[in-house]
Image (cartoon, rainbow, N blue to C red; front, side):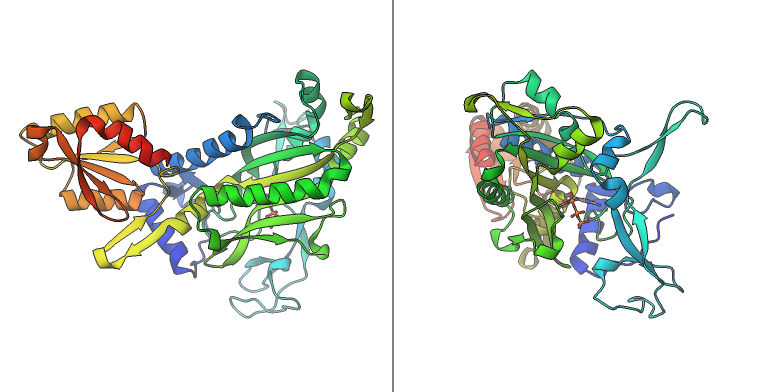
Length: 440
Ligand code: ATP
């Protein structure tokens, strides 16, 4: 089923290979030949991804007093997608090569391309291709209703606008945020998890007075750019790109993309858009329900708020973290994932130098104690050098080794992943020391 086209970017190929080898990501249903552009997160990948989501939730919701969270369903009333414009507009014009049948998004090809970039044969006429997956709701075929898997999480927030404001005491400006799976039957896939058919989004709709749109757009664009820097991603590889007038949706006055310089060029990681009152107005019209805010601070003025949207991809963030962290340390003949301790799947690994003389017992006790406070890993297999290399590829920032001296004076060695510096510290002080290093 998977039509695997060789990836032409060495770094991406290395990331795919490392992901499989170390258990970050696997192709979905691999034993059956895999399914194209769908990926499964393995034991290390899921930790990395959860860290991204937890940090986003903490920074966007828990630490702010004017943003609340939600978790809305993937399946929604089909009218939602008529109101949002997805049924009419969520198309990508696509061209197919007449000979090799490869498909391309027309907007991804240089203008006036008439020949297939791969085999050189003629490209067919552009066709519209709806990106939404359909499925059926109902137990029997006769009464089954055709519905869609959501292509974005944002609409779950808009349709619940009234539910949220009437069950909370939010005042303008305020945000409603959620994260979750979205599905798009993408035409052009590839580049690992950059564009997949099932992916996760982290979205926040910030409701404001319409005249404050320019201020809040700038505010959120900057906040979101800074957020990616706070994950340890190199600032010089990130940029904010304002959309040109030809890229804007008809209801949008301005939009920024946070972009990262991938091996295949600067590409979108998150969109921050001024959506005006378009979504709430569309849902009011289609549902005939009022979706308005009563501003008690302004003499009970009724208004349909405008919206600044922040829409990021979880998987694209994971890809950026991996691409940015990958380092071939030739001097020491090793591959290192230089994750910031904040996002690293495991914060620390514990090894006994030898599997004898009481070292495993002491190492295991240290590991069990640490594991209560932070994700930790215990490894006894292979030479100490091999164990260090495995943790370098996993991106574990610190390794602790219990040796002969440990048994005598209760000290251990603490190795720093990046500098390779090893210091001796007392086993008792480990938790405090590591917490300080991990939390920065
Ligand atoms: P693109 O132009 O790359 O298809 P988009 O402009 O359609 O992206 P949005 O609809 O703005 O993307 O979605 C917001 C975010 O969701 C994107 O910035 C990206 O991080 C993520 N995203 C969108 N589509 C996919 C996908 N197919 N696979 C992985 N992540 C995606």
